[in-house]
Length: 188
Image (cartoon, rainbow, N blue to C red; front, side):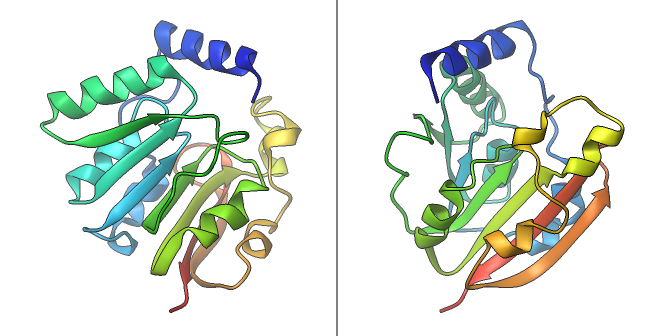
């Protein structure tokens, strides 16, 4: 991700958190599928809404993001809630993937397909890969995200090769987008 992308996200977080403070409604609805202990990695987690949610459930969470502004907001949010998270400023498209093993790798509204097999390789045995990402159908109602950041219809399960699909759905879900949602487990 070029430096201008870091600047873009720093500006967005400095002006207004683009995603709000609450975790995704889709994740909240499926809370029972998430572990309550172990190590979690929140990819491109921005201001920490999901990292704090996972930490509040008892997980040791690392949030990896390119935006120093977003990570500072995540630090402030976690401290205000009495939670502990680790913030890692990194360009997930260039820098080495944060070394696991991870019991949970979470990606919400961040799509870079080459990262998925790397994330899978860093899961612990029995670890979960959780992805929530809009599909191309989302363009019927919304201009954003642009097509390059959208999944094809029913593409997501094919990206989770060699994983056991715990849950998969797609449609107009709680967050108001046409999303694909996957929870997949690495076999022992």
